[in-house]
Length: 291
Image 1: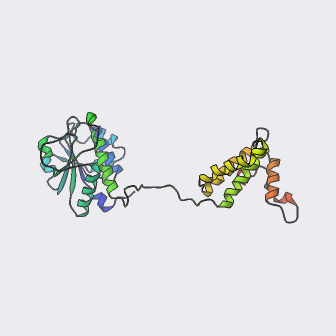
Image 2: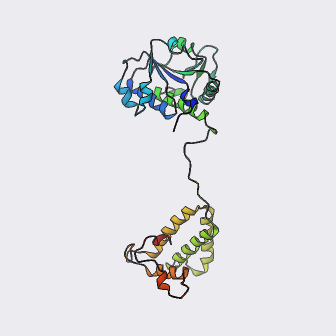
Image 3: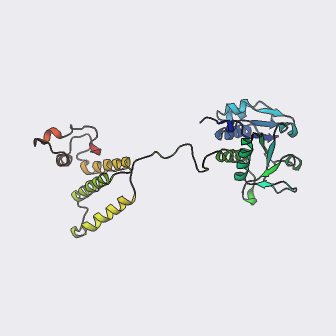
């Protein structure tokens, strides 16, 4: 998946005094998952560079290699036009408070206007100080359980990175891949399955007592019709029925050409000159199950 210009110019992720290299690496990985590449560190406790961070980044080396170091928060956000501060605690003040969905859309709109944005994340142990939150334009908080509101820093970055990516989709329910398109089965194909299954069940004495057979057949067809099968799905089911119908422990697959299969083929493909033998598939040939 290639980055669009908007993704490349996405919000900078700013970690204030992160403690563990492993957490920095997991933040880089979360960013890479959702198209973000600019990570800024303010006074990482264990110094930089960090091999633990690179290992935890799980091949998000482009994020690790581009990390910028800063001595303080004002210098880390000096070139930005708009900054969100993440916090799980209620703060005194007059700053607007957004949820992650609204914050992601706000960042996307500002990026489209050519503004540079960033998101502040605090220390693993206690987050951001009040004066650090005061340097941000707005607050973003997550709808967590108030009784257990602390998030791992990589989890918090992952949530905001996800909302950033989602805000750029044509529809927020889009995904990078979808269910393959399959043509619905024709009624002829569906009726072929009905006939095959009915014949297989009849051969094994399923319809008992005989007087109930019409109702039992109706029930089977109602179940199979409701599913709305696609053509490839019907082929799978025909193969399953064929394997159960024509083969057995006494005549396993690969042991020969079952007589019931031969009769079914002669009925389905009678030769024009009456010589049925020439129309039969070779013994042990491929494709017997799905014929």
